Length: 80
Image 1: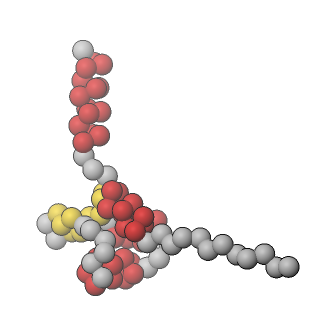
Image 2: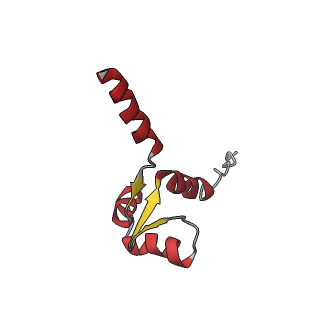
């Protein structure tokens, strides 16, 4: 019985998306909150959720934002 309840709780927790606040995202990316706000409201390239008056950023959206900002590594020519 306890195992079944535990599995149901785990299932529910897995279905709820992990979210971050603006200061948490800024801390993760080692930048200022104003930079994150610029991406949210200015450039609009970082998706977010509104919960009441609060802004939340899903892990999925943060990962997508970072993937879109990757730049390819440039090969360096060898010196002869």
